[in-house]
Image: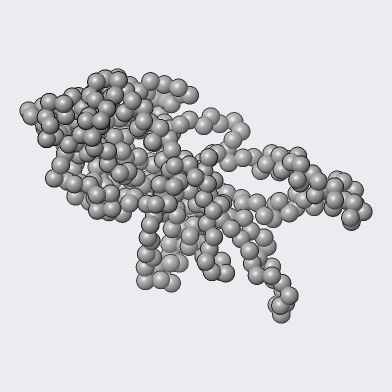
Length: 356
């Protein structure tokens, strides 16, 4: 890296040190993902962003991982330790990964062809500032979230303290070279697979776009099962069809989750303050397994093991800090219980994590 580049990165890093407070997922990437720092490591990021790169660098240095700004030297050849899959200003419905990333993948694979003992660990990394899923109407749902310079500035300024660096399990380029070859077509496939990986990872962290609430209710009312239930309600209670529909909508309003990203951010601060005073610590096990299930596209239903409102608050908080979309909670008016009533059923609820 030239002297001018060092000065540039130092100047760019000054505001980031103040604005950005990111966390690593998993908490100890080298240990939990089995990274061998004695072997060469390279990082793959979804799109060209110097803010993302410097945020990644801060986490790498904090966890004794190789500095992404320091190039890899292999047999006298200096190669960048990071690769951006896409470098354009926006993400369209379809695009071809930029030639530079394909060339770098090909260069790395070609080195493995000439050096049988070489095994570079390719680590996919995504850096996310904020996790608002957006709404279905009026928005395009790109496979990746690409921001231009102005958008990135505001995202870092407003969401810099709600950011995380997600390390994925490494891919052995030695195994890729041995099993699939080292030509340019393999490099193109590698870039395409990486793009799909990041799209799935974003969906696991953010979830699908939120439907317009009234549109969702209209779709439910149009379903055969609910239409039949509305007719039965009107007939059994001798009320009009419109009144039965209003009753159905009232039940939907009561049960349906009302997901708000800004409220999640506020609640995260409040719950973090609360847990620090209630508990000595929160131990989380098997989080990587849940992340992998979400990444693979499974729909996940969480069932709390206790009859307490604290359960789903704590579960939502933990999932959010594990880089997963908080579950949408389906519940009734559990808190509106009259004192002294013993004939009421216990509160029932389930937590549904929407992954498509």
